[in-house]
Length: 338
Ligand code: UFG
Image (tube, rainbow, N blue to C red; front, side):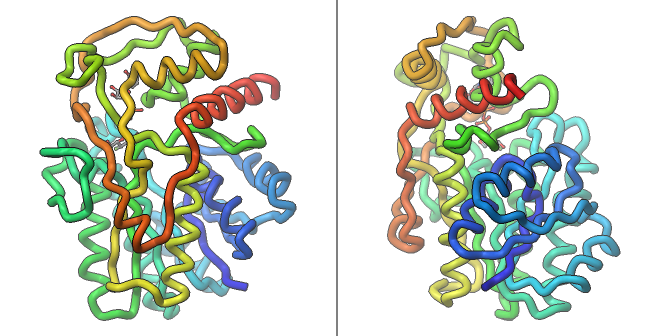
């Protein structure tokens, strides 16, 4: 049985990935400082999988705390989710974002080298592409200057991996996520936004639940069919499964280069209005929304060319937009019950 250290494993994508890893036969150690998540998630993961992951509350940006995990446990691979992730906040606190996100990645890689751990999967983002010249966007498209320090940290960790893997001691895969939404079918785990949500899906579910008065659609004068921005929304469980497939690929030595990166999306773009329509249709709840100003820094449209992930990883997203919006709503309702 292989043991995977999942940093940020109590977070939104991390927790869903721990479930998929455990149900695929991996042992999991979660390391998280709970800065944006709750320890209750561990109980929920146990409820879903029948297996309790080891949990360590730790600040992974602190090199001594990080090293202590590697001295105590035998680890075969790492999936690195731990990072600050709010685009807007990263513009207010750029130094904190660089220090935290880069230091965590470096501490993991340094300890991997020290302990001879070979395999690393990095949580990356389609934000590395900036505004695409055309869609769907594939991995050959060059990355552009980042629009936020957050996006820049994703680019910088990919750049670090490019060089750090060159000696062949460490092999890495970066997964460039498009827009993860939705929640586990049990509604036991999901996204737990801190305060007012920045992202569309939690804002929709909180508005429908009466926690927010109304949703503002940021701009309806974009050069898209209905005037609202287009994104490639992907169910978080589909995304979680991509991490298991990536880890398997590394363990089985199927990787073609020491550092590989893949788009993880559905290959289909939906507008903000498409999401609202799907939500209203699947839940039967009428959403209170208005059109407002464009939000600074938003790209107009982006969706993934997923052929590399399909052909190389053998991974493809399965869940529909309606499954995404309905599962997000079930999670919202479940949160309010508890
Ligand atoms: N939107 C609204 N109203 C809201 C929130 C969002 O209209 O209240 C719109 C946005 O303008 C955008 C779309 O919904 O058109 C999606 O916005 P999100 O904030 O949900 O997602 P983003 O595409 O902006 O951000 C996501 C991730 C980031 C990542 C980025 C890369 O959350 O981590 O994709 O493009 F950096």
